Image (cartoon, rainbow, N blue to C red; front, side):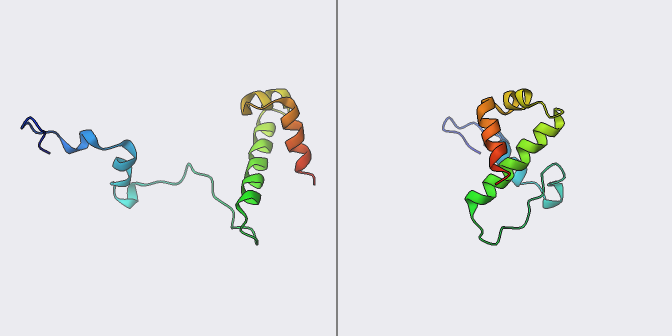
Amino acid sequence: VPRDDGSEEAPEENVSPSAALLSQPSSAHSTSGLPTLPPPTASGNLKDFIRIQEQKYIEHVLRNHGGDKEETARILEISLATLYRKLSESVE
């Protein structure tokens, strides 16, 4: 790619990491590290979907830390009161 000063620049120097990844053959893309998403809810409501995913993540972190709510709140960077509120919302 020619520069204003007449020198040449390698095209990959201006390619963002995301664009470089997308330019790879599709066989190079792996989704093995990504969580699988559940099918949409009957309503398809984004707010409900986000609430459910947040709840699952909170429960995951809580399980991985032996049920320690203070540690879970610290890791999630939320207050202990917020954690208790979110946990109580899951029962409703």
